[in-house]
Image 1 (cartoon, helix red, strand yellow):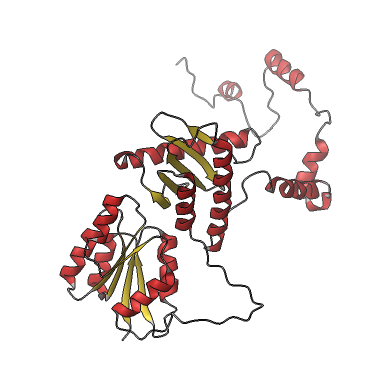
Image 2 (cartoon, rainbow, N blue to C red):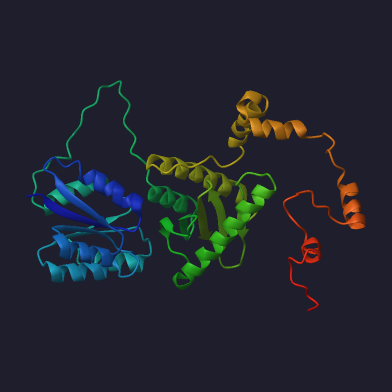
Length: 350
């Protein structure tokens, strides 16, 4: 019977990465995913769990609270706690929660798999010394969204870096925003600005490449789109300082390009930011309008009439209507006045 592993993380790319890694174990594991602690408890009561892999920060109950509930459900369960927090106090709380193992994001896959096999009492099958031919270049490890944000936050010494989709859902984050209680309102306001800026860019015939800076004495903010459906928000001291802004923006734009590639690698189509797509769109339109055979016949007739004098002068028509009144040319229909004269309509005076 295969061991059952439940991964609980609201960041989909993290749970996908861990699940893919676990599925490489030769003896086989039954791996399930959950986005919240409440969903994880339902899953555990439905089929049972041998190993819980949970993020410390979850929507609703925390990873520590979830771990306590799982200990009640199954005292023999093995638990691995993972976290991306960097606050020393929260980090200490996560480490002392009582898990069997603890990993900080980005998770080392080799160490993670080794720990899973050790906790479940499985023979080691993954961590092996692998020899490569001298001429073969090493394979680079796929970069995750979380690792990109962690690196960007470290390089800019930012307080928090948050990656959001156009529905206002946090896809990945590094660090913590200044006021957790106002996070929902802040993200909602940012996405309202994002949608308004996208519309303004469209009306101005510009690309979706816009940038927003928030400068204050306490903390600065930088907000910019990542393709047409995602955005990046950074918070930290001095981020919008003009003296160092150029270098910081260069690093941010580099991270944006990495995020776009990371989204593509997990199957999310992202159109290029900027005017790169415009020439292709223009060439497609030019091909259609310069080759009449590509157009429908009705549309061609409309185009051929452009610039021609209409058969009836609109001004003359309306002058005739005002002076003479409307004339009905359909013989099978009567006006109200005609019907009244023939006694076919009620007389309003009676």
